[in-house]
Amino acid sequence: MKLLVTGGAGFIGSNFIRHVLNTSPDDEIVNLDKLTYAGNLDNLREIAENPATASRYRFVRGDICDAGAVDEVLAGCDAIVNFAAETHVDRSIVGAKEFLLTDIVGTYVLLEAARTHQVSRYVQVSTDEVYGSVSTGSATEEWPLAPSSPYSASKAGGDMQLLASFVTYGTPAMITRGSNTYGPYQYPEKVIPLFVTNALEGKKLPLYGEGINVRDWLHVLDHCAGIDTVLRRGTPGEIYNVGGGNERQNREVAAGILRHLGLGDDMIERVADRPGHDMRYSIDSGKLKALGWNPARDFEQGLAETIDWYRENESWWKKIKHHTDEFANWEKRWYEERR
Ligand code: NAD
Ligand code: DAU
Image (tube, rainbow, N blue to C red):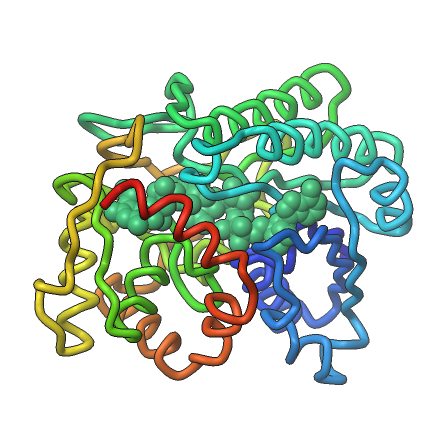
């Protein structure tokens, strides 16, 4: 298969590209990425430099909202996997316009191109946040959508475009709804890499509110395997939840990070809560498991390995945190008013 992967320079997309090139030796990938603050070609350096993978991989800088750019890169591709999105809930609270553009309009542009080029598969990488807070039980794919943040509302808008395109035009498109993902190469604004890199720098861990909100943690390689399963074995028009089965309160995750690094809970700093903060996410992944997928990684071990990865790859995250103003400006803008 020749795949168009969009947003492949980000966290999950870059792990997915590495996963596919290593596990499907006949597949080729074109990676279309706008390189926003979250896009980082360092994530794929060894793929682009290793002859075994470089011959099957091409990077193109471009915006999924640009129909001309999408049309050009899609020529000759069999399938699309769309990771491209604005992804940080806190940033969507500060300003949602880019979220609406990329996550809704960008999805529409990709769906139109998928029709024109008659691609055989399209996977939209979505999120469990579209179900909103789940107070009891676990959301199945049939649960009503109740997004709470501008981010999750935008992702839900993309999902709706996709389902409408399937019903109206028969576009062979599928949706994955993944839970909170962690692992190597995650931009350090998200809670696990933020807490780990702060701890490594001797800085406090800013925990929102009481720290009792629950997230279901999924290792990035398990997430990638789930998306790959849907790409190859999913049914068009269907939605598949991809959950890690590791529900933890944020304060437990913070304590686990500090314990692994031999630091005490005094490193935790309580800060003002995120507005509209969903209390709990929980999804039922039985439908994807029926296709043969299962998350393979234990959370405590995956977290320990992830912490070690950030410890051993300081230059990767220090470049993001300290070599440009982008991260520092965000940290100042968001956290100063929460203290
Ligand atoms: P990320 O923020 O690390 O990366 C997003 C990538 O998309 C970046 O490389 C960025 O440059 C690119 N991009 C943004 N706007 C673009 C545009 N208009 N055109 C082309 N490229 C653009 O995100 P991530 O955490 O890797 O998430 C990837 C996808 O998975 C997203 O769709 C997100 O909603 C979904 N998701 C993420 C998680 C999670 O916990 N991280 C969980 C479930 C679902
Ligand atoms: O559930 C899937 C979603 O997970 C994805 O769709 C999103 O793209 C991804 O960013 C993530 O959203 P969250 O808002 O859950 O992730 P975040 O890492 O921002 O926060 C995780 C939890 O940690 C959440 O309850 C808020 C809390 N938190 C976060 C930050 C950044 C803190 O307590 N302090 C912080 O500084």
